[in-house]
Amino acid sequence: MDILTITVGSIAIFTASFFASVSGFGYALIATPLLSMVVPLKTTIIFILFLTMIMRVFTMYTTFKDMDIKTVATVSVGCLIGIQPGSWVLNYLSAPTLGLYLSVALLFFITLNIINFRFVIKRQTLGRLGCGIVSGFFGASTSVSGPPIVLYFLNEDMEKTLMRSNMTWIFGFTLLSTAITYFFTGAYNFVEDWTVFYYLVPANLVGVFLGDRCAKKLSQELFRKLTLIIVTLGTIMMLINSIQRL
Image 1 (tube, rainbow, N blue to C red):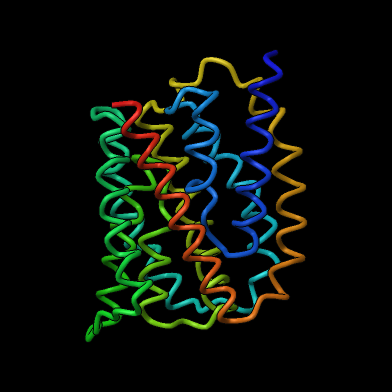
Image 2 (cartoon, rainbow, N blue to C red):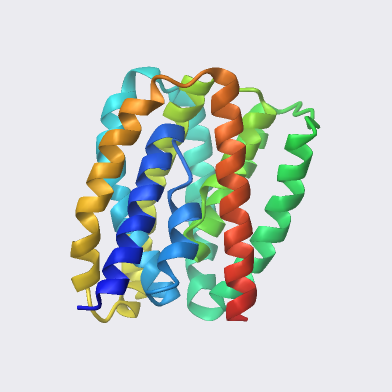
């Protein structure tokens, strides 16, 4: 077993699980560019899917009482719609190309959020359904599903506990749907050896536990800044990684 792969992979997964537990999102955004440095990209996507599912089992339990079921249901339906074409794209188009397009789009919307520009959403349900479709598509095709929903909720100025809880449950439902879809599209065939995955599980569990403890201590403003920092850094890493792999 390559010690460098285990070390880099464990650091990537611990960092991702910690910040994703604190904020409710960002797992794949952080883990994908780091883990893909030592593990093939499509294998990385499959590993992250299952590692995130492990994290969600714990965080869904701790955030159940705070989530809004209508919001979760609306966005989740959108994600389910987007997952289908996203899974197809994963099999037929280059993942780096998809990552490049997603990175450029995210940087544009991040910039708007930083300067406090707000879109006026007149039909909230339709807007949430739309952001779910975009999230599901890119989640299935690149493993990065969080930023479209994060930026949309920030645009709504959603309260931090509600936002974290909603995202935790939305991504929990869509992860299960993605896992089922991958089975039928044959995406699991990309993984030739699962040994590395088992070494990453302990780092995942430690990060989840510590992140959940820290989440309760964040103020609204600090939460907003943290989410923007995670999205921005993760997007930049994904952009650099995608360019290098083209």
